[in-house]
Amino acid sequence: MTVKPSAGVNSFGLCMRGIGNYDKGTELKFDIPEKRIQYGEPQNGGPAENLKESIALSEIEGFDKSFTLDVIITGTIIEVCIDNRQTLITRNYENVGDRLFLSAKNSEVTFEDIKVYPLISKD
Image (cartoon, one colour):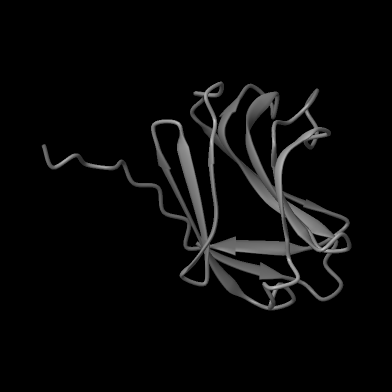
């Protein structure tokens, strides 16, 4: 997908394998003021409060303009690539929902060219 944040963006993200009305899932949040990407689980219909994993954005630039975001989920493994660079790899054993949520906080962000594909095994 292509992510296009507006000028002065605060935070935005997506929640994969979501359940209910943003009740559960695997949340990937871009927190621009804190200069980090965080991974967590939504709480009570809102963003994750307890981080499971976080990566500093000091070596990753360009969140004030368009970038590509690829997320690959295979079983319990979640891999995130930003502009074709592997950025985060983690596991999530708990969430198996079937919803995708997109979010932005005090910001305007456009998510374009969203494609969802099942992975096909070559067994």
